[in-house]
Amino acid sequence: MNDRLKHLKERDWTETKAHSSWQIFKIMAEFVDGFEALAKMGPCISVFGSARTKQGNKYYELAHEIARRLSDEGFGIITGGGPGVMEAANRGAQEAKGKSVGVNITLPHEQYPNPYVDYDKNLNFDYFFIRKVMFTKYSQGFIMMPGGFGTMDEFFEVATLIQTKKMTETPMVLVGKEYWSGLLDWIRSTMMEKESNIAPEDLGLLKLFDTADEVVEYFRVFYTTNKLRPNF
Image (cartoon, rainbow, N blue to C red; front, side):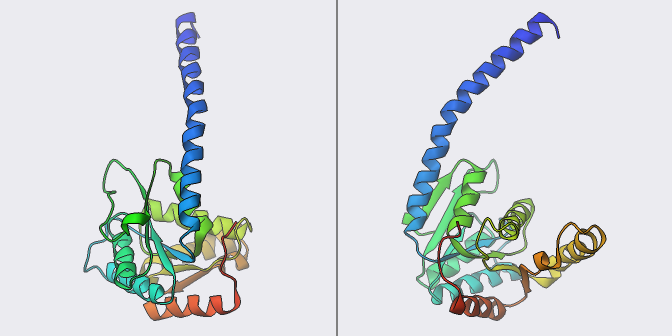
């Protein structure tokens, strides 16, 4: 490495270290604000899914119905606060006069607050990892509707936390057999049976349903014998 390049790299790295030190305070502030806001919400269920799902799509309508009925059961609904499946779930919660929470994040495209988040429950974050902590700490269950990379990220994050017991065992529901069955078949045949990278009981953490009746009944039965409490 020549002297000029070495000097430039050292200068850039020094500036990066200074920025990182100040960044810690912003991260701490987001955690504090998020914890204080969500601790007041009471028992909630997080609904994940694509921001690109349009009204009229069967999964939009299903997310809307599930959220409305779970709100009738007394649960608040937490989503990423954006359009698509998130909008559908927040809409269902509002229509049932339940708590409708949006844990929003600013993205270069497609993410904007939907109009069905309660005005006093619209939270905004700059960091994805903080946002995911908010979802996982205060949710009494997780509903995975069909989605893209973001939904898969949240799916495997939650599954890992439950599998490793960093989180109390919490209902994790996949909705849409047509959408999820291929992934679950691969997890079973390749990840579990062929490579032995997970145990059969790990796969048992996931419940796959097709209807709102199945989802609502599953949560109702689960919480007749389990406590409602933060996950960690």
